[in-house]
Image (cartoon, rainbow, N blue to C red; front, side):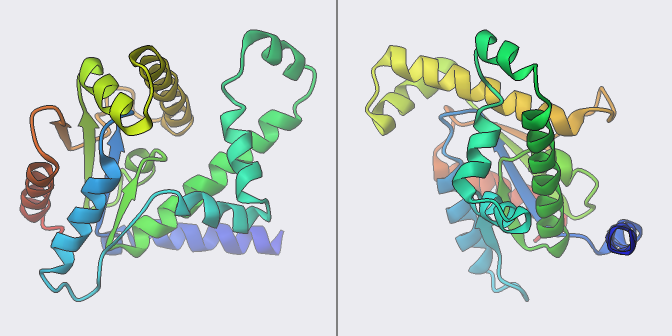
Length: 225
């Protein structure tokens, strides 16, 4: 109980001192959009401006950090999340036990805590994992959404993953659905009509370099960099 109260107290203090949160840039994306390339180039460009504290970008590291806190192997943690999207027969079988759902929700809570701590620490670009929702109240923040027509994403995915168009289409649609399901956990109970990003960019209309330039200028306008 003492440990629980200490943790809650620490989180409340962080919330009260929210003017000290960030800066953070989150990048959410539809499957097939080049988020990692953009994040890497974006961090390089920001660091070329010699900020007092260097910027970094993270993606899969979030799961590694969460697995450390839960003392679960990263692959097992990933499996818990992926198994959330099973077929109807699997759901019927799983309905006889609450174990899976308990693990799944606990994983999401820990991931949320990890992302929030990283966002509060600041000078970071976070890819995916509903970071735009989790860090929505961080004052020094810019939340970017990368989008593109399905046909464009299928073409890029076919090239990148060496898939047929049919395979790429199926992969993209399943992946987009999984991401929406994951995000819905963090949206639950929040303002229904809120937009969870400040900036939406059509990747089919701009190069990676141009997108990075757009984000840089937007971040400067918001006083983040």
